[in-house]
Length: 265
Image (tube, rainbow, N blue to C red):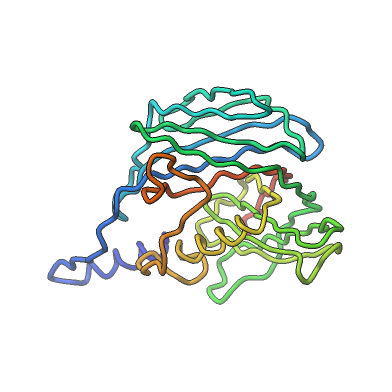
């Protein structure tokens, strides 16, 4: 996305007349990004919820939503999250077992939203090292990721490379085996800067959701001006009006992480 903005800037300098880019009007939708996670080897975890609203493409500020009520239901007990920053709600030290169901409840502007999920286990990241390969432009950073898949079939994973770089994979062709693959950061990725990389186990529904989301966001060739083929609906329901659903997803995951530091050449 940054590269596209730079190219457009150069085009504007060489034009005598201003160019008016017509973008579709954005519907004002509530966006709920909610994740409950525990690290591999631990039994308790953290809930983090970010509530915002959609905004126009050229708006640099995300409209965060304060004064919402956020709670987590577990084993007939209700735990209240606290707003630690505008639009950011956290809850700590939550006991997380594979057999439990976790239900999130949110109240925003007199509407109530809810979703229920169970814990999805992950595997460990064996390593993330810097490679020597590049793509066509030759100014990318190669991160070589190695992981060993869990032995059971049907595992799905999300890898968060930081800086809004997300990748999803499934074990269809490497079930129970170790696999290595390359991810390429663009030229804006900061060198000599420690960056945490997270590997999370996810279920099939979230895997499919993220495939569509990454495509719409342009990481899979869609581009920022591409028109979405469909409204991306997550698993969070509006209990007052099912047709007025929010964007976003509630996921309950186990995760592992490593620190990756790219060395400048």
